[in-house]
Length: 156
Image (tube, rainbow, N blue to C red; front, side, top):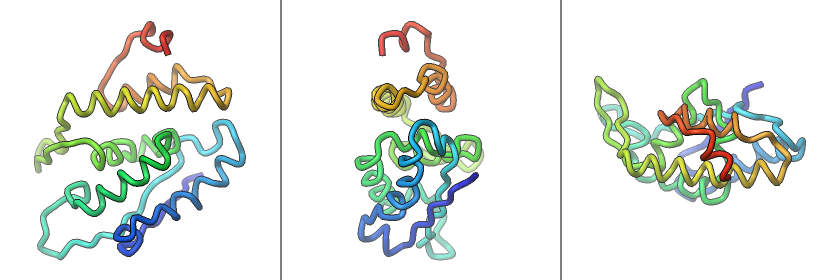
């Protein structure tokens, strides 16, 4: 079951995270791992037709995602990783360059900090909900290009 969160330009402008709240509230009510990797975003595209920027290069959209991440720091658990939502989410929060042929090139140190923060947040969030964590956390790290040792996860 894929859940699409539609976000309008007005909601972005007002930093309104209501669409996220509405979409994930039922998932949280079901508890546990309900909705894992099921959420996608449909973001209103405010660009002019001749604007070459990617959505992650538009300051207002990035600011909206920062607002979402501050309210729901564990949201990556619900994102549809296979559809590329985790990468797009990271692009909204992590400094990067966009290359037409190579795609997104993240600042390595910033991406590492983002990943570690997400691993810490999610480890605690999983523990509070009795969700098995290690494989999920390893999967998150791998999706962002990191292969972490088991001993790291034992320390969490």
